[in-house]
Length: 139
Image 1 (cartoon, rainbow, N blue to C red):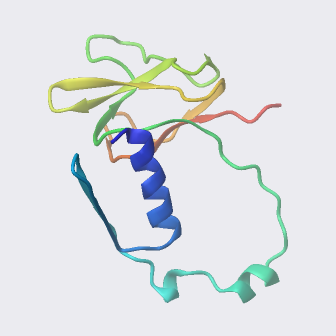
Image 2 (tube, helix red, strand yellow; image 1 turned 135 degrees about the horizontal axis):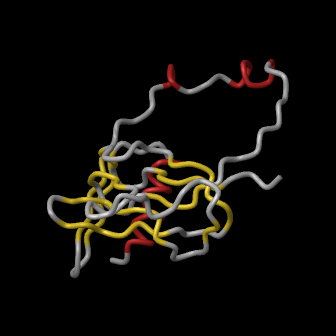
């Protein structure tokens, strides 16, 4: 199963607030489990409507973790990070690495724009889907 299909399934499971999901075929099987949100953790409609409407721009993510590991903004043999806030990004631009044991996997931008900030600290343990790099808001 291609990773893009798994991402879509994760989104569906999350939006449906399912605690567990299993899919089996002759070629693969997948099981997703997560804690379900309790009604106490779900905001009430009344509190949403009572709050004044404030428009805030949505944070745009330039890169997310596709595996679990430690995020590195630079290769261990280099002194400088791959990119810095303010750098121009294009899809495919190397923005960092994820270390899985001794293996270093590239993290590339999935969107174009200007790098806003790293959303995780260097060497921070990340899981699948963790936002890593944001885009700056246009001036």
